[in-house]
Length: 247
Image (cartoon, rainbow, N blue to C red; front, side, top):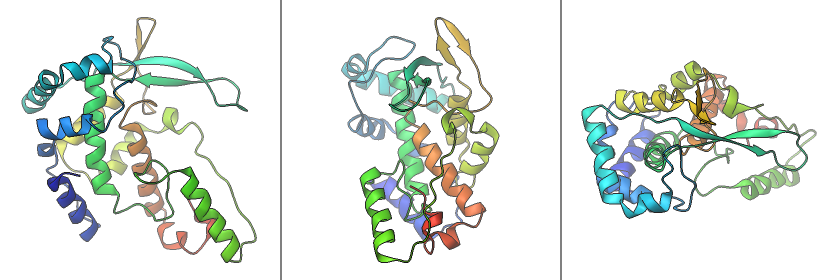
């Protein structure tokens, strides 16, 4: 983690009510190149047809172009490429996968790192979804520990149905703005939510949902659900009841 990003994370932890008004300055060429090194560079291309491998060969030029557009306020989020894939075994039907361009994926991942630095301090310890250094195996271990070491009469399993396709853009923006007040960062998130999806040459737009396949979407999900838990008062009870554990 870069020094400035570490400082942001430290401030977020020390002041749980702080709203960050200046974060876009972290999106430097160095930060973007560092972010690229952490990404899957074999990912499929978006609507422009450029693969991650091709993008990587032109990394210096591509990063300079992104930063130039950010500085001038002219960054345009292209539509994502929609591909329908089969749901996992046991479930019927397909789910839409939306693939950003390599450049857009890089910028999304960079902004996602910033959001993680801010919101990580707010996440419940019992939260394991879409967090660095945590995975489903850790969640199962924590659940087993609760059941084995504590008096547990019931365990409830719940799921947010079709989150990535149904989350309200309006509410998602409000929940992110709970901690983020930088107009550039909020503007970029708004552009990604409204970019639309292209399939067979036709672009469609939606008033809800966040692209499943975009680098920013998992972080937005973790951020919004954490904020929702806080608003609903579940934070106070979560560590005392397995029923409130979010896995």
